[in-house]
Length: 170
Image (tube, rainbow, N blue to C red; front, side, top):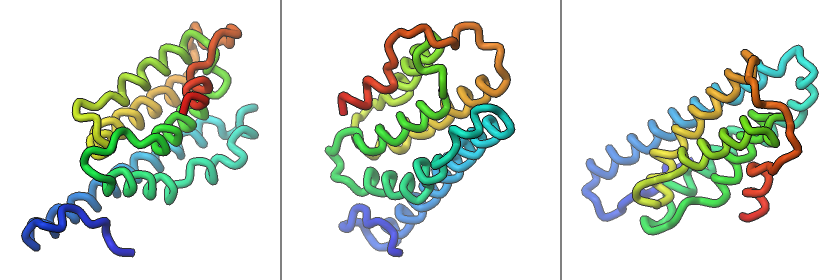
């Protein structure tokens, strides 16, 4: 499949270099995504939560993730934060916090998620380059904390679930 076109007006060498940087960045983000997803599987393996992984490979599909990244990177320069990519990452966050979304811990994690999604430029490209790696690192940390246990305030308190409510706003 051909590489995404970026800045068609650039000289050929600069355009080629930019395309190779784009491809390398996409590969790195996809690798980071896959490592985080596999960590989620490993965290649930052999536990009562293992049944919750049914359909997870399809829901958190690496090809879909890459397509969302490519769409965001090839969108016009003035395009805002991509809603479809945000929904995808938010869904990953809900899976990483399974059973802890309606807790003080889950609400704090959502605040951290929102902070990780902030971009200075506000464009879809800056979101992919800046926010996506931060979000994946946050999810990696949340999965690791969940696996280690010992989180004091992760019990469901019946309060709001900002992860679900933010999905309904989109």
